Length: 315
Image (tube, rainbow, N blue to C red; front, side):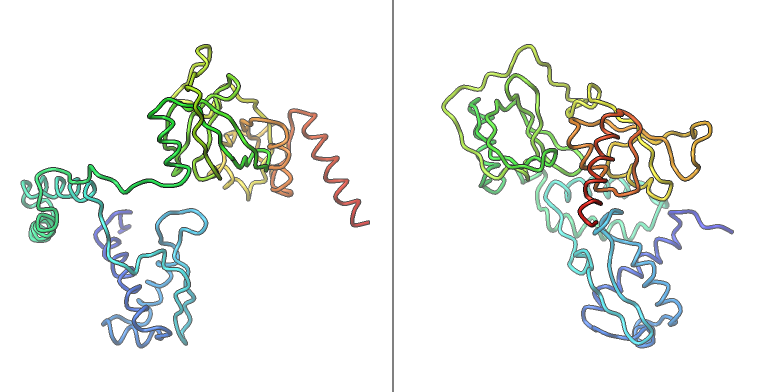
């Protein structure tokens, strides 16, 4: 019988595999046979758990998975993604988890009641509060503090900002509107020369508070559902090589469900919004032969021209 994705057997196997990480830190270069002897498993089970660890981590993207070298002569942990340390919860997370556990305590027979009660009691002993005692946050420093001050006082900002679009660092004078969080990053929404812009906080190299009051342009509306303005962005028609369709997981690329008539089976039709021509050109050049531009033609021509010039330098 096929096990469900979240079956107790699979969850138990994952927990058993994760428990190997602290063991390996205490026993560097231990062999699978030694691990099996100490933990009461077979060597084959240990190797299976080590292979499972290599597909586990804090996320699914590059650099987010556990990295280790598992050989019969020894096991070396290269990057454990911080999973060798105890779980640390913020007060908000602890109270949210406690609320869930207390709900489960009222449903006997659903899961292991003893485990739920034990976990809930441990959280109660730590939290010791009926509310969420995290109203006070550490003092923010650096450019983020200046941005927060500008928003609170409604004043203009002078930012030293790195733009990934143009690959440049320059000074920008903006009228800040607010902050929002998207895809793991925090952004400042602001107006620059009457146009709505977004700035990633981690790309702000410096920020200076100006005496000028912040006056967003009244003719431009900020859309919280479309903070990057992709609905009004230019749209490029692309072809993505079939083995590189993973690019759609990291960029705003829409893959077509049906291939073009007569199209090469190795290439998948796709569309992608972009802000300016130079960014799209640099993006496509950086992807080598994974991406082709079909439209706009001027960008396809420019990419071909730059590629030919680069090859010419090797001649």
